[in-house]
Image 1 (tube, rainbow, N blue to C red):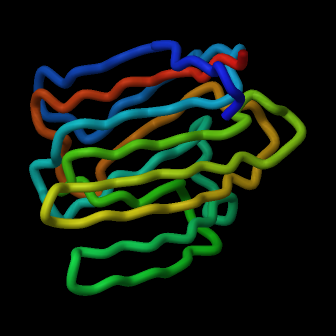
Image 2: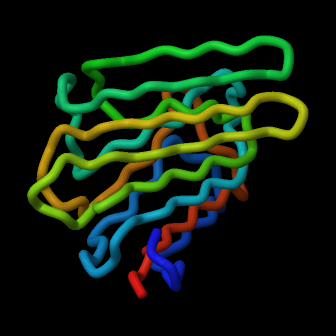
Length: 161
């Protein structure tokens, strides 16, 4: 991130009832990166939070590498041909997704995501969306169950200095 870069609030959603998905659409192409902050939990603690870009569900367009630990054990792995970016555990209370160079229309998109829950788990993922289209919409959804009432999602743009 360039020195002097600033987070600019683009949109925010707070669930007034349980829901399995949220979408940010019509994202302006005026920032360098996007940041999505998720705070809350899912009703099913073993569910995973997934991210889909521009409605692309093609099974070979996404790949990810992850590492996860709980203080006594750790694991890592890869998915080389997937239908979405990220597989963060929703049992955790905080998830941060960063989509780098999201408006660039000549390169694939790289994402970083981090999850944590005090005293429970920590996870980091790096993902690739093999598409050169600028990201105009992001859908976050639970693999099983719903996000709980009161869960918040905030979308920020990083403005270059």
